[in-house]
Image (cartoon, rainbow, N blue to C red):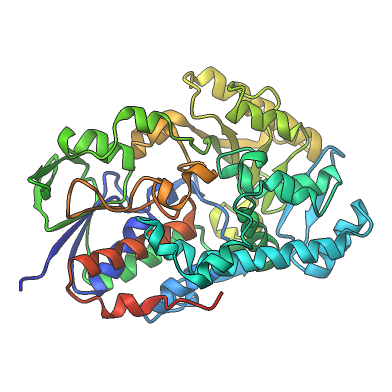
Length: 507
């Protein structure tokens, strides 16, 4: 039987992950990327001697990356030096001074005790429960294609899910362990980018706190782009063909089967297609209407995680009173969250995030200079994305940065670039300009997400942040694995290796 041809649309992490697994299993894989470099949101650019990661900047769950590399006979250190950050990050809270969040668990417990005497043993219990959720969630649940409830009809999984707190909110769960406002916000922070308020997010996601506080925050020296370089190298080693500047304009399908993928310059015949770009765009704009599973009303009812207003800034001086990662929670957490998800508007006093990777990695900025990345989470429903608004918020957060860290910054800016909703749409066809995919609410979990396998087309699959398991670098890696395993099972070629990749672990 001739080798089956797989066309993957999009070269983000999920697309490259799927490409690697499918090529290893013996498929002829071609990845089509609309932009001039691979990586999707994890692209990188250089300007005036500065090297800016354009999207993801947090490296959590190093075990997921290591598993991926191990599946191809590698280890993380084959591709980059991975450095654990200590402190993991810094929080500017209402006290208006920076609070280091230490990597050492003993030091972290001492920090909790400073704010709430007796909270250290409660933190230990909270993280013990979160560790269980992480083990079950990351070894079992996220590797399910989530096409049927029967996938979860396993006594071990059902027993495990009773301890996963899927019906309890994060807001309620966290307050069972701590009561001090700072500690509450510290534990709620990882879910800010999951796309819902703490009261609407299942307590299952305390597994994110385990990833944060127990597994640690890391950084690949050279920048987050090193991850994409590693994935691309593995893909090419396994025979994947990667074509950049190849935007897909149409998918040809007939009688329940995709036949070809068309770009502006070439037609690619296909036996199997994986949509690893924006799911909504691929379904609603590339497929014939009769081949779509969902209509616009379905998509408009989806709850999305935020978009982001980003700034890439180069400074001709070194900064003080900042860490590699910095969270500015000096204004009201709940007010900003409500302005993203409920009372939708441009935030009056936004929380924001500042990353200074040049503190850790001298290679990303000229000598004596600093690389500064700024992010404000905002609603996807905002329609006005003008230069005036971007300038307003930039000036606002630079002034706060200067005041809170007690230094001059604005006068030392030598490079600045903004990036927001319209770029997310133009560069990635991002649905409503979202930056993080679907919100991880209970009614958008597992089988309630857009399907990884088309109901209308027998050879059309999806991967990435709008399908299972969800947004983020580690889930995107897993998404590629899940879709590759499913393809190998349904279009049997060589499933042996993929079936052995992630043997289920005891819960």
